[in-house]
Image (cartoon, rainbow, N blue to C red; front, side, top):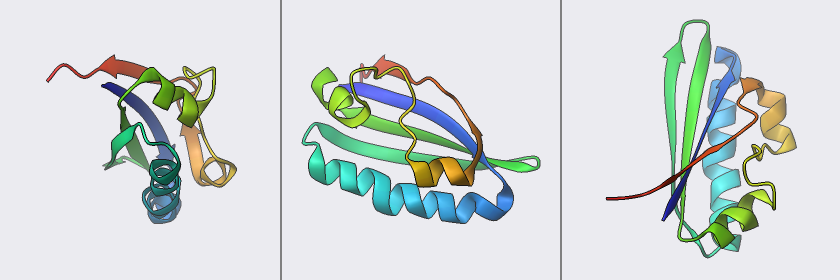
Length: 100
C-alpha cells in the first residue's frame, strides 16, 4: 500500500469551505472512480494566522496513485476550486510505503 501525503494552508475564513470541498467532493469522487483508493484522511490544525491541512490518501498500487494524480504523480493534484481556497500549498507530494 502507498500513502500519498500532502500539505496545504488556508486563511481561517476559508478553512471550513476547503475542508468540506475535500472531504465531501474530491476524495469521495475519487474513491468512486478509482478502485485502488483504499482510504483517505484529512488532518486540520490552527497554525497561527492560517489553518494547515494534511491529506493522506492510501492506494493499493502505484496504478491507483497514477489514476488519481496523473503520470507525474510527484506533483500536487490541486483542483481549481481547492486552489482558489488555499493560501499556499506544497507543489510536490511525498509517497510512503505503508509498512504496518
